Length: 203
Length: 203
DNA sequence: TTACGGTTTAACCATCTGGTTAATAAATAT
DNA sequence: ATATTTATTAACCAGATGGTTAAACCGTAA
Image (cartoon, rainbow over all chains, first blue to last red; front, side):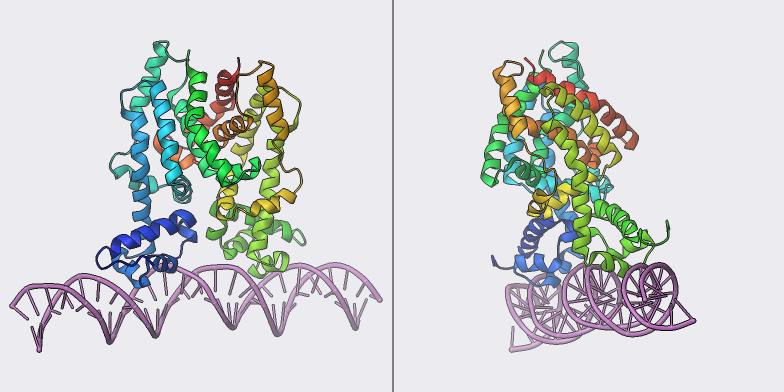
């Protein structure tokens, strides 16, 4: 379809592979479908990426390096916990609304093959929780926020922001809403989630 | 392996199918693997369940009817919102720790084929949010809890309770913990999540 | 123009996989 | 005991799928 000229073929393949892998996962994806979507011959996939596994890993690493910086923003900058919760919630939900398949893709494939994490750890900018945990402990000590474990707070934040997108068909089904209703709810959550968290932890 | 005698063959198949489907999903599961795990001939799978699709649906409906009652407890009984949050959080996390593959299985397969929900709606005891939303509105009005939308509160509760299990490899990886550390965290969450929610909404 | 390298394609291959079948074994009924 | 129905198996099949290959294509340097 979108057939351009020559050596960006490699990129066209990656683009098509992203779409197919992120929607269908490793097991559900078909090399032929990727080739068709890229508008090239299937042999090209192997010419540039050797195997399905390696093409998949290229897509996966790429996806993770897209998400990691979003996480690092919360974990590494110098703003207060409250500010971090607000900015992360807003930015992250905005980000995911643009890439709705990403979180589910990563979670699913990490479930399929948990030791993918080793591959990722080597990858640049792997998120570290240390600073965040220290900061939580500090603000607790200073009486800025209520007593809470940094790890648990981190899980809370991640859950509230990510889960609705991972489970969107379930949410839509249980709440009897369509794509548009879902979008509105998520739009609300950009601030509602932060307010909810802060109301709970602020002294 | 566990080879008993005669007509519970059908159940042996379902047991094996549960294990394989819930761990690997529809696309990743293999009929041969299910047969091997049940210790019977592959043709038996088709003899009792016709096709992979129908065997899968049997497993899927079964899984959902295991989870639905847990949800209905929160949605339908007459206790206060606060009590509901406490009991649901405790019961649900306990329940999932016994069936760790369930939530991810359901979410994943609902993503693969969103109109599975239609099949489920017909199924008994499909959870309805109506009562819960009314109760939230009522308690808000009575000044028992702060102003909050019932739908959003429901998403909060579900997210905080379910997400860690769906994303366990991600959580383990980011927090640098192993199975045991994870288990401890989840044990804590049986009360910590409820406290967190209540601290946020209680007036 | 020709020779050469990388690029692209159609055809092909081996294997895997869901599903079927024909024959056999085991119950059950007569 | 014998007929009949039900359960089980080994062997097989067709189509899908990841991957390979040999030949053609195409830009470019000599």
